[in-house]
Length: 123
Image (cartoon, rainbow, N blue to C red):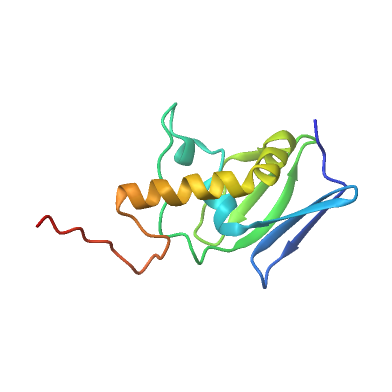
């Protein structure tokens, strides 16, 4: 189990910074929101693509026992516990996971912007 040695919520930049000794990772709220381990996001075996979360912010971080964090987002999402192992996986795989997410959005014709709808014309 990889437990962070420091945890900092930066509300202005909408990031959660996790420190692991000499290494730290800055995880944007949007990234954490779209990768939430909750059933709402992960589905029951089939993940549900989250979109329109570009401006989401973290408003709360609470410990959940000795094994996880409960994150609360300003869009009301607060289910799903981010275990230490899952947070570490998100941190070290952030770039690849983000690129995969952006490709999924594009393939689905969805946008990160909550005020934008993507329309595809079949000509």
